[in-house]
Image (cartoon, rainbow, N blue to C red; front, side, top):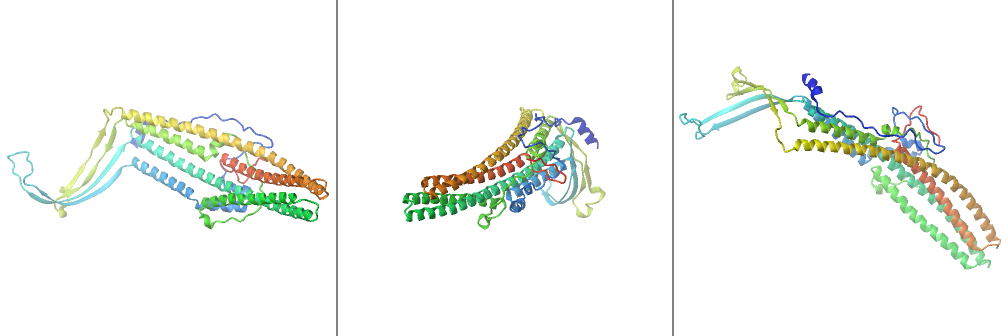
Length: 470
């Protein structure tokens, strides 16, 4: 088309060029991490299946189907795509068909243009059928820039939807692993309570036989009561995570229940890739980049207002005062016309609008670079957290074994009358604390794995994917 050729020649908007950001060539890795080779062409897939937990998989799948935040994001994407169609329609002629049927009486006392011409009151019918068209010659690229901006906004909405899915999956996993960590901790407390009750029975027996005082019994009872109080506190925290999972999966909290279960929480193998992968893999980065493209297109729309707006408006139809003669040759009417409008003076409104859109573009560039920097920070945080927690868990397991030996020695010494009951109390408390700490660390490591997967933009799980061992 001639207009398309003119558009390419005369478009006044700036060409969009994706800004460069400085990316390091590698992550700051600690052993035993190493860089993997994830492929962006491979589907991210349900990354939560990496944890091999059927309860988590079921919850995540349910959330992807029923979560209302995700439904809203899907609605925003549908709106954005519809807006692309609305703007694209402006590139084509708008054709309309109008009809009119009226009866008109003209006043005999209407104003005259010639006092020598008589005025008569006239009553007549008017029947008309008009086919008209309107088309804007997009010589300066205003319409095309609107289409480009709407397209970029729709792509941004699609990236936002992917980011909503990623965040939703991470929220489900985080709440789930927090809940399961509390299940493990409650199991530790249950075993400690059984041990403390056994020790209380021993203290009562020794008091009854005259080998111990009531102080030993009181100290053991106080320790048991404190542990029972901690159980109620942890159950309250567990209920809150359970209620959060209900909301995330689109279920009313009173109807949702996840039975307690002690699971072995083992983090999955996570392919690390290189820093530049986050530019392709993270949907929030993609969203920020598409926002730049949309803002750049708005500059072209604003600059096109400096130039004339040219409209073509042909029409063809029939008009008659008598219905039988409506489609006769004498009733035909038509018009061909071109209108052009050029702003002469607007007090600087157009210039100010161009400055506004340029500043808006600068904002999106700064936001894009901020998102990229944040992404790199989150990945580094995840790498260092998992590495540190792995070492802490290893040390915590050693502490459990050491405290278990201390407990056994303290019990033998107390039963033999070598030491007082205070040593038993201290040993029991130390063992309980070390086991709870280990349970908490395992839960934190699982949470850190979820954070790292989210920071990397999801999962590279696919046939033939190479995973990095940890």
